Length: 268
Image (tube, rainbow, N blue to C red; front, side, top):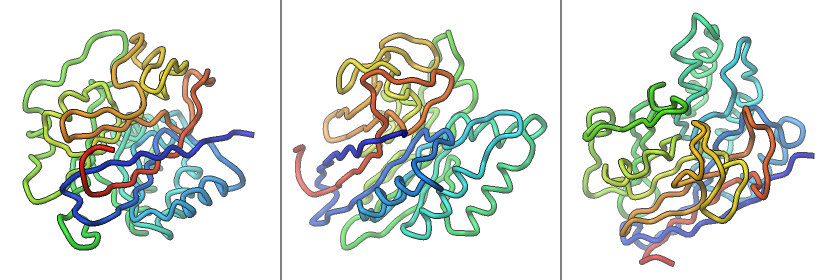
């Protein structure tokens, strides 16, 4: 039976004010089911009692005749419990942009999810008011296919995120959903307070909290592979994900459901 663990991070910031905001972050499900209709995963999310559920992409697999009901059913069930904000990974991007190859099923699923209340963020943002204090702004970056090429170095050019997303502003706490952690330095420079990524599946073989063996582009010992990172008062959390794709095994690399507790103060 497939298992996952719950990993909790405490993120402290003066911007949060005197609030305690709880988020759940899911990434890289790749159609995996934990119990019938993902009942065990849904129960874990419900027990975490999040204010928001954030979804970081690659919930399904881009393949001919793609299976969409697993991710679709999970997202439909989640939005009945909590507000859901969903940014695409490389698999969703391909399914949406290459309908001639994969069909229009994913676009129809997205339309249905939006009608149910799921917020799909493709280079967009949504402002969320939780309690008294600064609003949270959730940004979803939908990276182009070129940012996922294998076996060659890819550079994110200076100013790209400002041109693609716009710029974060003062007076809000900014959370960036950016599937590929390879460009962490650009995300930090852009100005996100909290960056949430996935994609690397924990490096397949995990050596420590932050170090894994290989990235999906076949780079060995990638930086920002998994776990938590900080730069000044900015934070980044990279999920090892809930499922697998291509390399379908893990070594010392458990699947994780991420819980984030946002609270007032300096680092803890």
